[in-house]
Length: 271
View 1: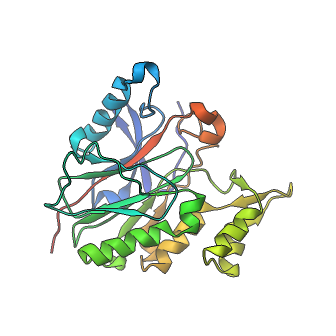
View 2: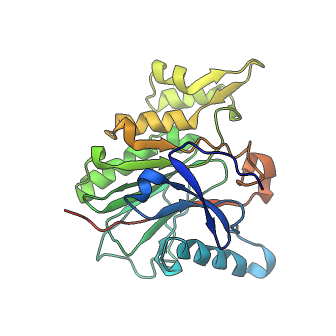
């Protein structure tokens, strides 16, 4: 299989289960990866059990030198809630608890934070100085509600992270080449406080008259507005719909779509 070329800041890595995508600058800060459709992470209906799915998470964990029990997952609801996992305060049976949230942040180096996507934007971030990481799921609703800003605010408030110390990787998702949306989304973003200049940058009209939304640009701009240095935000530039042979896409496969994951291991602090 010929792999699509990502932005030069990213690289494909060969794993025992297939290929994964990694952000080179973020590798210097925290172990992480974005999985592909070659790893089965979708819940399987047969018999109510999910042995292949569970094994998939174990394989993903192994690729970043972690155990499956260290992976923290959330029930993603397209909102602005941020799950906070403090070192030494891990809730009972945390590996199986999945509270409703669309981002999670932690300063516990024993944990791996995960989000799942199949067209939405997976965003991983870490600060080596304070030893904090975050994982964000940003669909259009979460993006309109500035979920990345909520995650950074939680990192600053709870762990003293300075936004300018963060390195951020925006993983594969549906791109501005393919993400056609209804005009009502402009009103939805405006209702959440987006300014006209932002709307003009994030929404464009294609030659066929259809409206397209650039979630990569929107989340990039929101990260920078939250204080992240522009030169520390890296976007893979891989569209899930365009490259559905290697990336999971709900728009391509519908209810049969699998799920990819973005995983990041919390780094130890260097303070």
